[in-house]
Length: 307
Image (cartoon, rainbow, N blue to C red; front, side, top):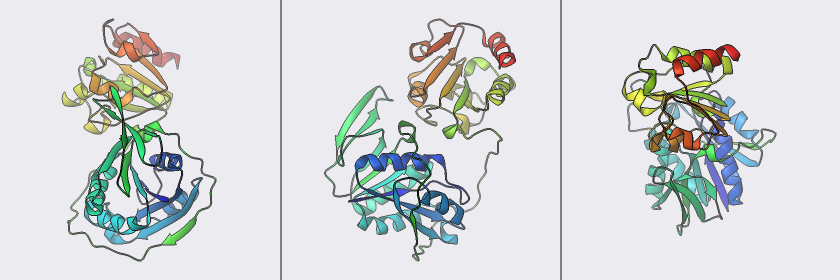
């Protein structure tokens, strides 16, 4: 019994989620291999080889895999999957795009958003926006799973796995046109240790500047509720919640966020939650470790000065 983990990377460096998915794979109790697929991705493969507990790193390096398109990645992974009992990926955009295709090609049911491993065929996943946990048992011979990486601690990087080059190149039937990337000096939202998140109470995109100042002082990332995103205050790649990013930083500061169930589903696993809201009845206070009933336009500048 061996588990295959699909690596997340940008063709240059490995994303932190991969080390967390490897931790999930180790909890299954099988040997762990990692698949790195991309173009000119040798550096990412070398990082994957250092992950503790990884036996082999399979490297598929070709121009055909440069953009992470799901059609040829799904075909490649399903072909390799014949040798594995479990296939895991982070519940990211890539994982949610590729693994359903893999499951369909292998004719098995996919398990989504796994947060706990009970045994090699029994897993826990959230339902009803995280208000309940469902324990499911898979009777399929192969388990194809997306993993909520925020539920697992990353493995250390002190290993020395074998690198194995794959010669298989599958051309995509999809034409890649372009992509637009948001560049920021702040940490990536999904991997940040500190997140300062704002809601509709900020009232405008200009007012998010006070949160940016606090986030920069704390060396953290900027986040937002869906209400703030829908209002056009910030781009949707900053959205935290059930339909945004699922995060679990060491510190989550929720500013002017009421605490709708969909938002709580995306951040309630944070180690420490601080809520700042002038409404004492705001649901966010029910999950907060520390709460401050105050006007955010007074509290945030004062807090920033103290940092």
